[in-house]
Image (cartoon, rainbow, N blue to C red; front, top):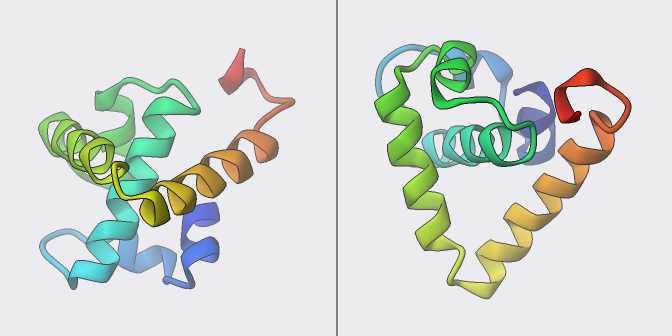
Length: 96
């Protein structure tokens, strides 16, 4: 979560804040959830726990981000985020 916050210049506490927020913060949170699920291979319940959300919110975020990746510019943003997170966790047990 802190990596995503730093990449997008958003405060980590804004990503963790319960309830609704601005579209920009919500989108960054959704990208973070998607990357945690896809790259770190955490299940949706685990991702939700980390972001203070439930698994259905994570499921919605993952579907939304996957659909938005049809846009080449957005896909590049998500790809770079995936690469940074994968590199940061390469030598940890999370990616094994």
